[in-house]
Length: 519
Image: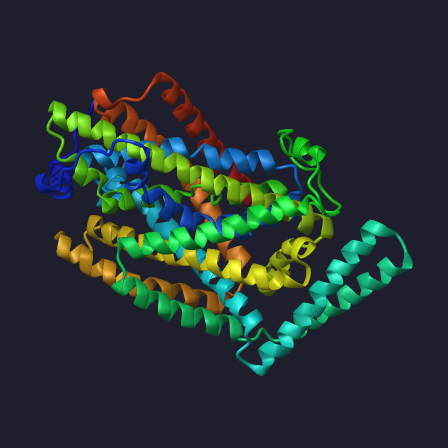
């Protein structure tokens, strides 16, 4: 049975579906491609913190054993994504407006929105970790202070010694040379621990935050879409090419590695493995593929692209139904193509992390995060590895920072309206979207300046997002069975996959909480 939205919800749908904006859905492959875009923007926010940092960290800690979890984490969330998009096209509502219609306790808003508010605090912390990672990239390439130059040189020496130790361990384990290199590494780590953290990364992060605020203030949907497409496409191509070229080196990924990766087992503990790899994997599960933030963000980009407006106000006519079916088809194409992009990228990052970092005993963290990640490219590019990686890391991390800041300016402005903290007019939301576009990047940089632990900041957000995944899975089921127009209902096979998606999101969310706070 279908529940209709409240009067407030219907008015929101009216505002989003003006008759003069109605447009017939495209016909043919090329016409459809020209109407895609929301998924690419979301991919721009995915291929960054989740892939470059969290996924490679899982590979560095767990080896090849969790490849199956990485793939499942990418694919399983698409079904919930499409259901949220279907609801948006049908009713013309934003992601938070849709969640506010869910059953359950309310205090001013639905209880799910209260958890979303808490998660948003951690997401801006994640954004601080990302802009801090970009700051590290620039500080490595161009230190701003004498202290930064000395610190960067010390990090260079430590990372090079670690790599040499990894090589000797593989070629001559248990020798005196291994013991000597281990002593050198311990001595260098102690020296770095005693050195004060230079301000260079935080300074660069602050400069980037100010630049991003200016771009978002004057930018529009088209600019965001182009930035995401260029940055994500360029670095994803480089990373996948690196993985293929790696096969011609001693670091090649073998068929046995792939078999281990799809054995559906957890990695053993000890000897280069994390003491609790499941905790890292489940935290990453909240970030790889679509995190909770991207699932909520997707309907906003669908609205801004015009899918709901093109469909028109739901009036039950045959012409409306035909348009709705056509634009839902476009939305599904958009979701699945973007899933293909970020799944290939995610698998490539994971395998590089396992093939190079795990074998080398390197775990990206702290101020050495970016420099350690660059080691993945050394076997292929040699002396050019750092230049290739730094350029790519800047592109993909900044793309994530830019896109998420743009998306959350819109989401938080919408949330402020729902909580009754700002006026209900469209002009009020537009004004606060501009304010938040300026404030969000700067606040993220300030948080990084105080914490300066990008990997931990990203993974903390991953835990919070993983915990919200079951709520969004439930929302997708609720919208499917209580809000979907019977004439737009999907097939039985789709329903089965949607239930499997919910089961996976439930296990991931509860498992992440248990592993983090109990296990």
